[in-house]
Image (cartoon, rainbow, N blue to C red; front, side, top):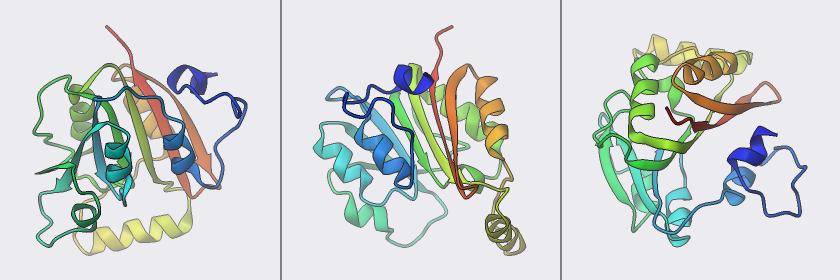
Length: 192
């Protein structure tokens, strides 16, 4: 129900639910207009290049602590790259039509500030796609603990926490858990 409001599927698979290819399926069926502004954050692979070839204006946020040349820079030519952090997004208010965050939200140092910044830069009626590891999974908890022991940033936001955090910021969305390993939160920022 919410899925059909947020995303306009091509028709052949309207009743389908998200499965093993999770984010790939979702992004392949995302409706967009040429020239829309999209912010990509996290483990994006070649997604920026693919979206750019579809006519979108893609900006990739690179972690400002990262010193080396990163994978996304090498494989996403023709995209804009900006150094920064989710907690301090260097963009104007209401700038992006879509914000896509892949396996990065739980790596922020302050999830309240990060979620507030996401809301600030996303236009009213804009779409948020957030994929991350589910902290209910023991392997993911161990990864989280390793990061904390090494002194890296990290949060412990469960899928239900994500839905609550963003609903308080006027987002209406759908949360889908995949085998208790990952989850995807897909939401639209409501108008005032």
